[in-house]
Image (cartoon, rainbow, N blue to C red):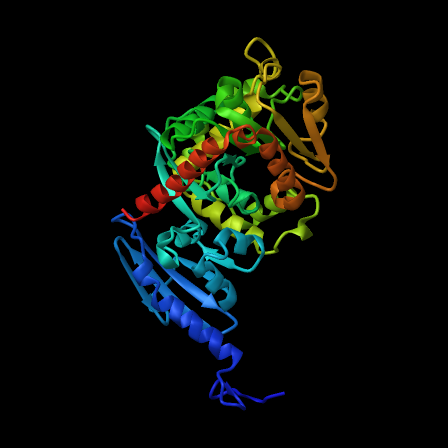
Length: 444
């Protein structure tokens, strides 16, 4: 075996070592990064620190409006630290892998503002002038602004809606699994994540569903497959009940359906105004981490760093008065969701039209799997699955099993299954044009 010369980075034959070759390729990729910058909003200013552990190098990338500066060493504090290895970084830059895929495969870690990290990939075109594989878009919906992660280029449009206190990051694994075959939109619902947080919004299921409908209008989407977890599942159901023609299928992951019992506190909860949350009060990261781990039946399945990322994001957002009000208003409305009567949830659920899949976790402490019996009574024959050793967030705890069932439902109810070849081509062109629009808007 040829000996390696550590100092010169060459082996005994005088050839560059593998480590040196990886470092040189990484340096070349960073050397072209500024030329591929698409630009950002005039007030955008973010500093990224990129660490490639296997070659022991760190680069600083500062994106500022229409300018991008790349330095071979940090000169200022970073808003985001992205760590990976040179092979993964090159695959990202060449478009052979998306950041979502790398994150899902634990080939990449993030410290700092997660939304900025998500948006990094969408700031740069790929070699050959190709648009990025994904992008973050701020979508005006006639009032609130919705922050959306958009990835994939398939004809079927899929919209993912997160649970209470969460954001679009809870659907990383789902976005990875459904792209590039489908075009996936993972939304931050108004009041959460990076979306705007209107002070006087009601933050109930009807309002959220209306916002999702207006998002579809803004993105020129006639019909979508909707995936919702917890509160997002309740919003998905509301959209389907009010506008069934816009929902191709429903994948409902531990949806926050209306409680039928334990409602004796409802009169008191009605008196507690969410505006009280405007009063500053502390939220410790340790509390958030404890709550996060309690959502899962077997926490060891997750990356140990996941709780730190979630706690940092939640605590940072929670410092905002409007975010606190939104959180408590939405929580209050989940509890007060009327179960019975002419406009009660369970009464209306009987009229559900779009094909639906209900997934429950047998270890879910928030929305017990026992609700499946009530769903079966209300919607005889609807497809339901109870996942063994699963908590409240099946797309995170059992991603392969959960996303396979979501993909199957989309395939069974996609427009392309019955569309003529010309119609399929038209839909594919529209999907490609949508991704081009995201790239163009990022460059403004």
